[in-house]
Length: 258
Image 1 (tube, rainbow, N blue to C red):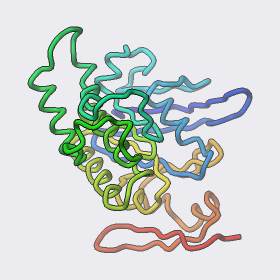
Image 2: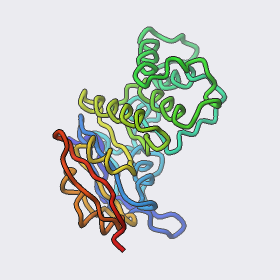
Image 3: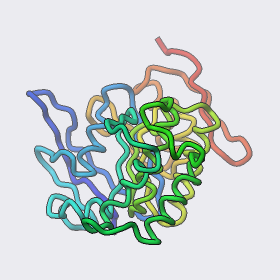
Image 4: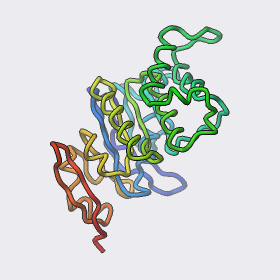
């Protein structure tokens, strides 16, 4: 049984087709990458998969049940989502932002439980931001904010985590740290779905990939079936160097094909 699946979903906004008959599924324990050029529909797909938007046609299922039938509280406990850009509108400390990941488990006017405190502490440590816990989020760099927002979702211990370009503002070291954490979560049973522009990270860390172009699904499957010279040429207009190093795939965008 798929943890989350999409059946032929289509999305249109103001007459513009953003997604057309896209199918998707993710199993427990998988790390899935969603790739494609700018404007391909990647963020739109994620918003529909987490229930922020509803497709014009088709449907999204969570454990074979319609996602739209789940309560907000149940979605909050089961599904984690980190939006693109790591935007935070609240002038709060890092620890308070991470604590918000526990809201679906807390009752009104109740103090944090021992489980809440342990989850918050673990999230701060996992993303190496314990030393920032008293800082206002508004004073952080873009990369630091990205790690804070990931830690907030991590604290909620969701069954599946969706992250839209989680490594975009990070330096190479923290990119690898975040991808290692997400992969470790997947291996421990929490499914992870990540939108990535970095094809090298996608090829190294993901179990399967979905390649979108112009709102349509162009390829889906294991990494080596999706990241092929032909797909790279058609989707991105590039020639890429593909290889294997120490048992892991890598890809280097080399030059434009036109």
